[in-house]
Amino acid sequence: MSDSSSTTLLLTGATGYVGGRLLGRLEASGRQVRCLARHPDYLASRVAPTTEVVRGDVLEAESLAAVMRGVDTAFYLVHSMGTAGSFEKDDRRGAENFAAAARAAGVRRIVYLGGLGDPDVVTSAHLRSRHEVGEILRSHGVAVIELRASIVIGSGSLSFEMIRSLVERLPVMIMPKWVSVCAQPIAIADLLDYLEQSIDLPGRESCIFEIGGSDRVSYGDLMREYARQRGLRRWMIRVPMLTPRLSSLWLGLVTPLYARVGRKLIDSICHPTVVTDDSATRAFTVKPRGIGAAIADALAREDRALASPAWFDAVSAAGPPRSWGGVRFGSRLVDEREIQIPLPPAEAFAPARRIGGRRGWYYAQFLWKLRGYVDLAVGGVGMRRGRRDPDTLVVGDVVDWWRVEAFEPDRRLLLHAEMRLPGRAWLEFSVVPSGAGSILRQRAVFDPVGVAGLVYWYGIYPLHEIVFAGMLRAMAREAVRLAGHVSTHSRVRNRG
Image 1 (tube, one colour):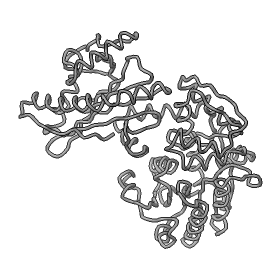
Image 2: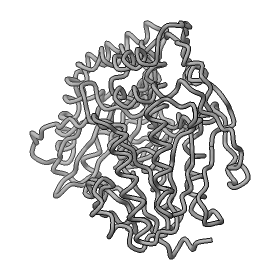
Image 3: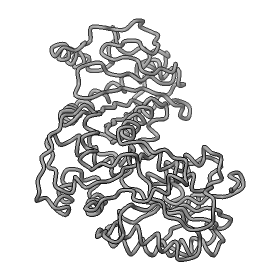
Image 4: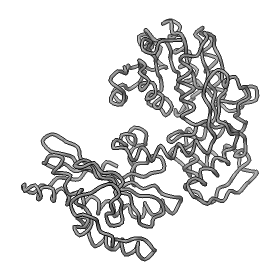
């Protein structure tokens, strides 16, 4: 068994979904990690001080020799499915370069994440390529632990996000025959356990392990379970004529963000992806969970991330770039703004601590009152509750139609909406020092439920552009007034 304190682990794909999550696990366990990255500057700010980030590309053989030096175990978690050209050719070349460099450097083991599916009947280019990469890695003489997995369930995984998008956006879904094909989804936490345990697995021979969760289900079953946990009613209509190719084109219309890779994945699910060899249950100590627990864990992780003071770092790292309507983080939509204030953080934060109640919301108060009357009319709490104390807050306090979910004096306030909404909403204020002053940040977060939630968010978003930006400017002026300084004319910057 290797000594985790003295061996170096090489991690490829650290900017991807599985690799990024594995990196956190390895760092937390105290292992020495070296990350291979085509753009080191992007990754360097997101790793622990003990983690080394080096430039390299598996498609550039000459860049790998120095990267491999001193490495005991190398994780191969890269693929080329997101490319516009022939991903099979790039996958083949990347695997050849990586395996050759590993052998030359004396690497003890390669851990590779492949895909489930019977290689004798698989017809999809995606799964064929996954199997071929494993064969190429093994052909160079380095011991390879290949973990073959089906659908990965976790907030941020491609398969899960496609399911989420379809269920959230479509009250009525067409269910072609391939949606009933059997799979064995695995929770991301269980997959990470398998990857981490592969480092110290006894033996020096190459092995293939099929891994999956405790349930054999279809994509249709996953959609129904997700809808159940989100409280959504969805009608699923079975049809016999929609082929995977037509379905992949339809996916591009419904969920364009995942279209390029998603089409290649849909082409691969005509055949079952289930565990047929249970040797992993004897070689590893992992006890895989079922789809209900996996989906619940994914949704709970998003809630925990939102409650964390550093949760927006996860948005920036995992989400796509900003578009109209805010950035997406899981099912949530996030609209963020900030303003520079020439005051120390405690003074810059004072208006956030005093918000609501008789003082109001600093800008367009008539619109806030109108929204309160609308909420009352539909059976909500409206604006009538005020606040317990005009100057102090504690967790659990009521602030008009909001409730204080988190409060750090002079630093952060998180409010959870208790009005009638087709979803869940939060409003967050935080302050950080910046030069001689501070930056006050405002984040509106909405977790829409179904189409009604999306219609609501995008319908009111133009008002956010006016009201929330005006509120932030007014809060900056109020902070300066309270501090007894000269008025400021800082500009609000929209970050999401």
